[in-house]
Image 1 (cartoon, each protein chain N blue to C red):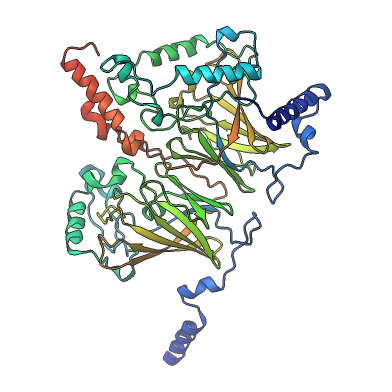
Image 2 (image 1 turned 90 degrees about the vertical axis):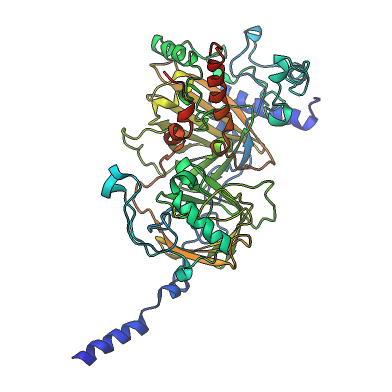
Length: 265
Length: 322
C-alpha cells in the first residue's frame, strides 16, 4: 500500500511540468493589431505582499493603534530570488533607517507616482493597452501611467518617476528596459530603495489566459553589489465588468502635506 | 502666415464636404466614405496618434466679433501677429514693477500655441450660434459666485488644477500640456492626457455605465462608433469636478471624427440643466503633432501650493488683508 502511494507521487512529479516550464506550452492569442505578437491587453493585478515588503516577513501590528486587526501588516513569502537583496553596506544601513521612518519617508504615503516595478505589485489594478508601436500601462494608483516605446532607441530627455520604458518582443515575452529614474521612489513599504542609476529589465510572459509571469532584474551599481531578481504572477481581473476606477489620492494627502499652512481660525 | 496652395486645397475639400452634408443631409461619414480613410486592422476608423489642441482661438466669441462666425485667412494672420506681440511673456516691463514680476514665467514655460484653429472659427463654442456659453441658472450662478469668492485660506480654495488633482473634462486648450495621445484596440479607445498624466480608458463593448454610487473626476465613459465618428457618453461625475459650476448630474457627450490625415475634429456637448439654461457645444480641431507625451509630475513637484499658502500666512502676519 505504502509503495503504491509513493509510486503515484513520483509519477506525478515526472508527469506534471514544473511551474517554470509552463510558458513553453501556452500560446497566447495574437494581437488584433495583426502584427503577430501575443495580446497582453487587459486589466492585471498582483496578489501578494510585495508592496509591504519585497522580502519575506511575518505578520505584525500596524502603525495606527485604532485600526487594530483591520490594517495590521500581513505575513508574506517575498518575491526576491533567494530572499536576499545585495545592498552595499551603507545602503543596508539606509534601508533600515527608511524602514524605521516609513510613515514620513515612503513616497506612497504622499501619493507620489510609485515608479517601476513597484507600480505593478501595489494592491490596485492596472491596464495594459497594446499597439504595435506604443504599449500604455495605466495604473489605478494616483492615475500614474507610462508608455512603453516599442523597438525605440530614443532616450528620455529628463529623469522621471515612472522611468523611460523601451520594449521589444523575445518570442512571446515582452521585454521592457526601463531607465532614467529619479531617486525618489521605493520598492515597498519596508524602505527598500534605489538611486537614480536604477536600471530595470522587466519580462512579461503569458503563461495562461489569465496569468502573466512577471520577472524583473534590478541593477543599480550605486546601491547594490550585483544585479538581483524578483518574480511573481500577475493575474487578470476576470470580472466581466472589470474596469479601472479612480484612486486620485492627492486629495487624501493634502491635509497631511499642507495642513500646517492652513489659515488658523 | 501665407497659406500654401496645399492647405488651401485641403480647406476647400473640408468646406465642400461640410456643404455636401448640409445640402444633401448626408452624414459626414457618408460624404467621406469615397476617400481612403485610415482604418485599424479590425475596420474601425483610425484616430491614433498624438494630437495637440493648443490654440489662441478664444473659448467664447469676443463681443467685437459678435456677428462673425469665421475669420478670413487675412484676419486670422493678423490675429496671430497681434497675439504674438501682446502676449509676449519675454518682454520686460521695468525691473521691480509688479507687471514685471507677473512675467516671471517667461515664454519658455508656456505652450499656448500661436495659431487660431484651422477652421478659423471665432470661438471654440459653436452652439449656440453666438459662440457664447448660455446663461447660468439661478442655482448655477450661486455656485459660480461661491467659487469666485475663494481665496487662500487652504488648498481647498484653489483650483483642481493648482492642486494637481486633474484638469478634468472636457478637453480644453490650456497654457501648456495640450498634447493628447489616442490609442485603440477593438474593445477600448484610450486618450492619454499629458496634463497630470490622466489616461482615460473608454470601453466600446456596450457595457452599461457603472452604478450611481460611483462618482469620479472623469466620470464614467462609454464609447460607440456612429459611422466614422467615435461618440463618447460620460456620466457619473463627482460634483467636485465642477466644470463651470456643473454638478454631478452633468452629462457630457463627445464626438471624435478624423476629418483628414492631420486633423481629428473634437466636439463636446454639455448637458446639465441645473447649471445651464440650455445645452451647448464647442468644437476644437485636434492637430497632429510630432511631439511626444512626457511625464508631467505635477503633485510631486507642487512647490507652488506650499509657497502660495505660506505667502498668504506671511501676509496675514504682516497685517496684509489676505
